[in-house]
Image 1 (spheres, rainbow, N blue to C red):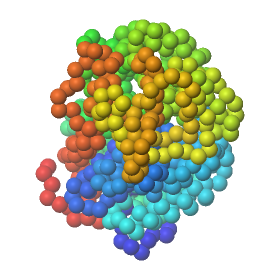
Image 2 (tube, rainbow, N blue to C red):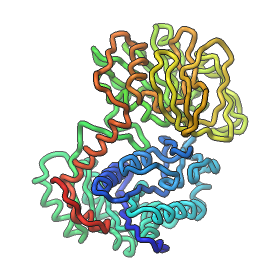
Image 3 (tube, helix red, strand yellow):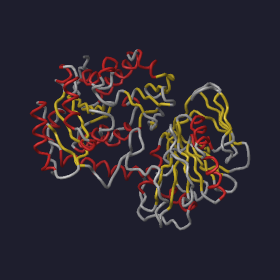
Image 4 (tube, helix red, strand yellow):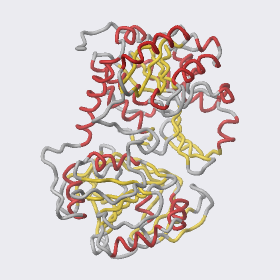
Length: 511
């Protein structure tokens, strides 16, 4: 273990399985410590996700670490997620190292020797520990995948490298919480088991009094204190890490709810940056459905083709599923179609991948709904961008992550005027709008974040839509949600023990 000489405490949030709530717990801890005046910073050695974001200096990291940095009140940097795997096939992924594309690897090739990735990850780890007071580490998947244990540098190996106290997170909602915790602790090596200083039981439903004996039993069986039982929280959400949220409506049987704007989003096999749709999901006047299986789009007013990490592959899938005909019918019926990033590329005339960046080299004819063609390039374009809409002149902000260069080949108009990229003033444009104004393509992720632009687009889809008063920019909404999340966890955590593990004095906290 190579712990930096500078004093920096660390807490590692590791899981008994995937999707037990590690990201949420880490986010809550970041905001709790930040509100207590602690200089806290998030870290995840390796993230596997197509849901990514752009740092202010134009580098790419997992969206979960962007969220955690926002909760911690610090500027996101590539060191917070030094290794990012972006799956583009069932067995392969693009590897992003410290914010930049390094290679494309098969799963077998990546795991054959992880020492290269670990070296990069720990370089970033120590850099963060030199600059900050407290590190909140998020693990990946299960921390007890014994067949991968020697190659796993994200969980206990990171905890050892940072000298971190480990908090184990289990999900009681999925059942088998005793087996999750006891089983995990029983199979890991004794030296790693000794690092586990507490357990958090997440997503509890019901009367907590009925589980108090369960808490006592877990503590007797493991000798590890339960730091808290966190009730399932409702009424607010934060951006998910790497999968469409469980609460989302996927392939519902019915049409959109009466009195709401029905929005359909195609659920691609390699969907990416689906958090672009979160503001629509949160809008009480919108009924958002993710659609995987092909169906009639009757009743919907807007169709979104979101991002994709394998654009040509997902375009082939779309055709096999029968979506192309339904999309054309929707356009002919007067519906509004919006393509974001990969979805924008699919709406054009064709997509060329001469280097085989997302599969076999070649060219695919696209849907032909916008007069543009795209060629995938080896250099990825990354930018935090600001501008305003051509129609209405309302503010637009977002981030661009794409490897395609899209050229206009026919009559259309720009969607946005761009005034700033990565903090530098520019005079540019983004995206296109078809001549009949029913098809829009854009490279701006987060296009629905600004309430005024969201209102313009929803009104174009449905003239009866009236934006709710007082709607704020999504970044402001999320800041309030981080406080709500911290308050929720604070009510149910043993904060004295948590702050003790962090080496921090317990502040005056309203319980």
